[in-house]
Length: 105
Image (cartoon, rainbow, N blue to C red):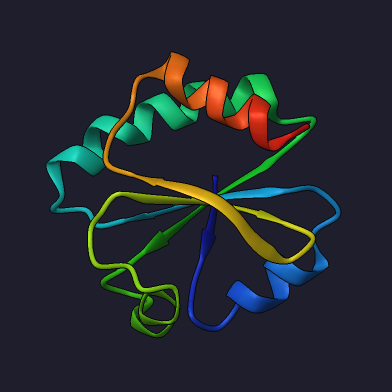
């Protein structure tokens, strides 16, 4: 999973030919620790369609503030460089796959 920072976020989002799922997280966040392995599993299945990335909110405060990240984990789906959809909190693998499939249409 690609790590995004305040420095590289805009470049990576804008240059991407594929949609990007961005997980805003913190290492001290228990729900983030639940979500992370689920996203890792899904990444293998969707690697041809989507780029998976993470933003550590403690290390990227400017990007986190720009997108109004007040609760973590927050997941945002970017397409054509723009945020299109998202969700808060940990979700089941099935729920996330359904959400991704809807956003890939």
